Length: 104
Image 1 (cartoon, helix red, strand yellow):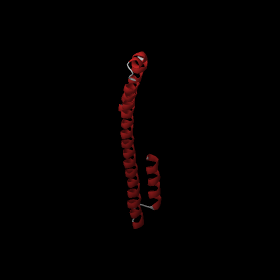
Image 2 (cartoon, rainbow, N blue to C red; image 1 turned 180 degrees about the vertical axis):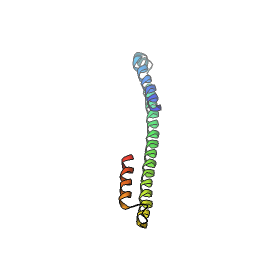
Image 3 (spheres, one colour; image 1 turned 120 degrees about the horizontal axis):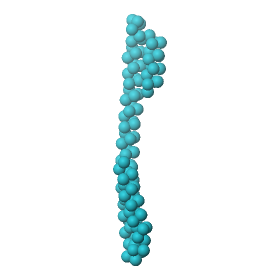
Image 4 (spheres, rainbow, N blue to C red; image 1 turned 90 degrees about the horizontal axis):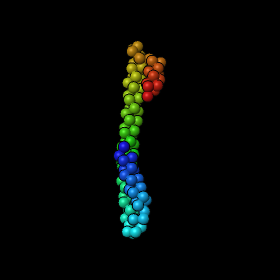
């Protein structure tokens, strides 16, 4: 949302400068207007980079938690299946793992 707001502000600066191009040329402020636009688009870029890092961090944490849950299921289920006391069989563990993968 902040990215689009920053891009909108940059677009507003460009529209205002282009709409008043005669005044901009008469006052020789082309470089000033260009630097304003450059600063506004840089702010939008910085916001996009922050959002990308946040999204990447959240996705990696989610992936590692999912992987950890799968490893824990296989470890504990495998332990129960190897005990041969009837609480868990290899087929039951395999079936549960398939259900787990369907959910994720």
